[in-house]
Length: 516
Ligand code: ATP
Image (cartoon, rainbow, N blue to C red; front, side, top):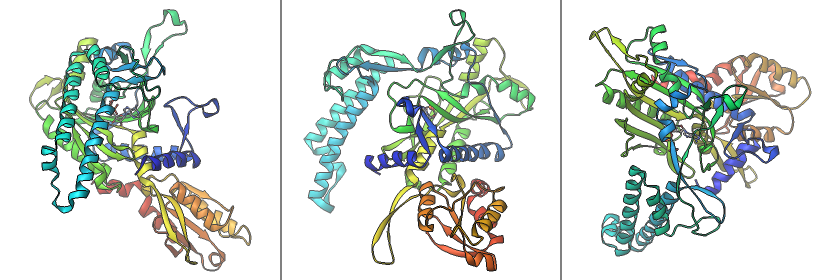
């Protein structure tokens, strides 16, 4: 999908009530978004699918709902006060702020693009005989460019590891990186910027303590580890899941709902015996990719990206990347975190956070495997994948374009639209009767305005998997037309069979059964 199509997805999301810019009538608030009537339903369904797959399918996983505000010591223990930083740099002419690491990454990407262009050209010239590996190894221009990339990345890695901000700036200067807005190289020094939002607790702000809006939901799980373990009589291995808002003061927020300042996470911490981390890391990698693939968004759109630069506490980490319209990017993280978090909370709180293992008669701090996914990124993955402009041939030989959202039926905001063919002859009454029969099971929509064709198109555009049309024949024999969103196929079925037919396709239960 091209950037151009991505723009269409964003416009479509607004036009059909999925995503609005926050405070739009005041010209919006950057990187903050609201979910509209259809978006909030889709989001709710994503969360339901995730939570059920965790809690219903695993007898040893429970969910909690912890507060956004936490004791300020939590964020010292977790390392967020000291190290949750991005390096930022300002351009003095445009007054625009950038992430220094992103400027360097984008510069490298440009060099890579040049290499790829040369390869594409050569491919065309040599046809079938073309050997890319050999070309990369022998073409002097490519060798030189690749060397340059390696040098930049090496320097950058060293500078990051040693916290050498002056060196990061020097790379930007040496590479002649310019501001995309002003075109100038008039840069400030690089500074560290903490991503946490802070506020004051208490009514008299001068005397009040500084507290933070949580930048992740995970810490709410760690601090409740013992509460849940004791009150739930949980035995290792067991997991605690949580869905909730997180806040990060992202320096450069771009790409619509991919990087937001207020977003929602679905995180699960799985507590295990030390020594079993490799087994459980593999288990959760497999379990999570299965969860994604069950949605049928195309297996080729996923890949794992193993981290080479691990955080000091991590034993292993991988991202599940999804092919967004702007390329493969992180959708979910799976991390083997050792006993880092619980041990740090033990130290900072002075409270023991150990597990007594009845099998070994020993007490120890459990290890943790974490799975962490952003609801909004998942939403974007689904929406951008679902958007399709289909050319269809009409009976008169002409063609027209149909915009359809092929959202997985179980996640679609509205499951069934009930449409009386005309607004008279008792058809609306009959249609409402059917609506009343279905509304306890599905989110339904009743529509009687405009031609039936227009109504079908509107439902296609919001991803409704089924339309039920009530016509004059319905009054005679109690049958209706059911129309399938993806194929536009229409069938006549008995009214009493609607519920089962729809349910088979849209019930989250059937999706969960695929995960078995
Ligand atoms: P990135 O490298 O993209 O900034 P991250 O590695 O900082 O992400 P984590 O801290 O691992 O992300 O957070 C876990 C998940 O939360 C991510 O995989 C992503 O889905 C989601 N997430 C993180 N930051 C944001 C954000 N600013 N907006 C929306 N979702 C986010």
